[in-house]
Image (cartoon, rainbow, N blue to C red; front, top):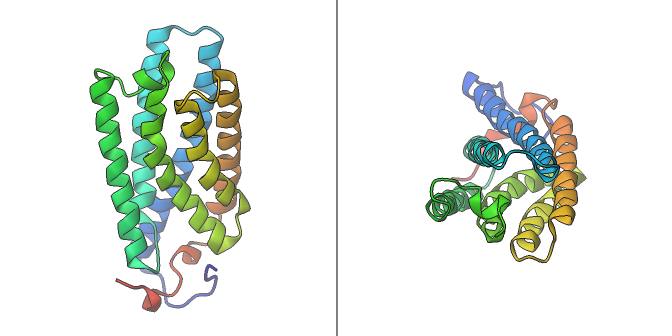
Length: 203
């Protein structure tokens, strides 16, 4: 479980890295909420070019915000952090594939008639899921476990065509709602919760 006691005075670097890590979580929550809103708006008949541009911006922004959390997370076990970074690099490679196959638009294979591109977002969702599961384990944020399962599962079922658009929108909205709840419970915790006992960190 997470350590809630002060083990040592916090340095400036400690505070900055925790703030950046939590900023990544907060931005991701806002972006997921915006994504759900844009998706619903698109169903009601938005201009396709505007929807495509908005979707592209949201995807790129979520990659950025997730990266903040991935690279600034505090983990006692170093090999877990290295594995998380590798998962993010895989996610970045999948983004490059989305750009290539989408001819410059990473959302082309997700928001169009073909939905298979959603499968390429699974590594990114696994990175976010790791963050939420870690917080769930450390601080009993149960919704973090749900998100770690639901986010990649939603993308898989949508990408393989097992979910129609409306059901996918319902799951997207559930994911966004859970992430907002998770974020509100996380970001107001004392900063030292994320640092714990630095003498216990493993390389």
